[in-house]
Length: 424
Image 1: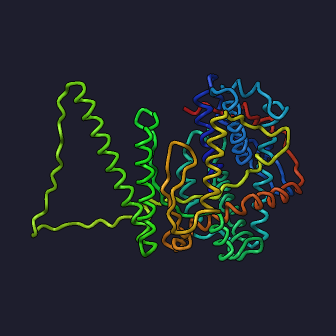
Image 2: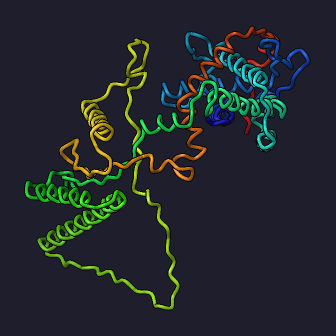
Image 3: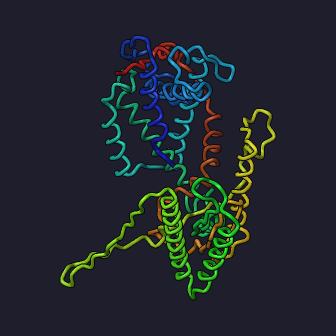
C-alpha cells in the first residue's frame, strides 16, 4: 500500500489548479471560532484543515475526470460549471470530501479499537513529512496547517496498521505465509525466451528457403537446450543460443548490405574488431552478473471484473479486428505458458506467422528467498494485492455507520471555489 498516494494527489491538485486558473488569487484562508470544526462524525470533531484538504483532493478528481473526457486541462470555471453524477460541482466535491472525512474518522476509531500505537520510527517519518510540506503555499494559503497535515499523514499510517492487524500474515482475516506463497506460485512463473523473426527489416516475409533455415535453427536450439544435463545449464544454454542467433542476424545483415553496395557499384568497407589481452601483471576486475537478468516473470491472465460484467453502465472499449486478434494471441500464449509448457523443457512456439519463440519455463519456487522474490516488500505488496479491496470494504462499512453533523458555516466558508488555487 502507498501511504502517501492521497497526500501526493492533493498536492498535485494545487499545481494543476494553479496552472489552469485564470482568476485572481483570493485571500489566504483563516479560521473563525465558528468554523474551526467542519463537521462532526460519530462524535469526532473533524478540523477544518482536514476537510479542506479532502475538498482539494476531490477537486483534483473532478478536474482529472474532465481532462480524461475532453482531452484538455479544464480551467477553474470549467470545473465549477460542470456536473458530476448529476450533481453540481460544489455539491459533488463537498460530498466527496465529507465521505473522505468519514473514512478518516473510521481509521482513527478503528486504530483506537485495536489498541494501535505508531512506532517511534513512524512518528519520526510523519514529523519529517510535515516539516517538508508545512511551509508550502499550497497548504498554508488554504488553511491546511501543520496540525492538520500531521493528522492526515498519521491517519495514513494508522490505516496501514489496521490493514496489517486484520489482513497480515496469520492475522484474523489474512492467511498463513505458506498460503500466500501458494497464491503467488499459482499466478506467477519464470520464463526465459528469445524470438526469431520471420520478417526482414522492411517488414516483408522472408522467402521459403530462409524460413526453412530459421525453423531448422529453432529446432536445433531447442534440441541443444534440452540436451543439457542440469536445469541451470539449460537456462544458461538458452542465452548462448540467443547469442548465436544474434550473430547469424548480424552476418546476414552485413552480407545483404555488402551485396546491395556491390550492385550499386559502391566500395564495401569491412571493420575488424581487435581484442587486447591485459598483461599478466595487471589486475582484472570480475563483475558479478545477475543470474536472472534475462528472465521475465509472467502473471497468469485472468478475466477482469469489467470483462465479466453485463452492467449496461460499464464503460467498454471497442477493439479493432487486429487488436482483438493480438489480444487473443497473448491470451493463448499465457495459457500455453501456464497450462501446457513443462518446467525446464525448451520448446518452439508460434502464436502468429511472423515470429518464432524459443521458450523455457523455470520453477518459481527456486527464487522465493528473502533476498529475491520473497522479500518483506514483496510480501506486503502481495497482501495488499490480495486483501486491500476487502479491507476497503470493511472500513467503508464502518464509516457508513457513522452519524454526520455538518457545520453549515464551515461548508459555506470553505466552499471549494473559494479556495486559493493560484499559489504561485
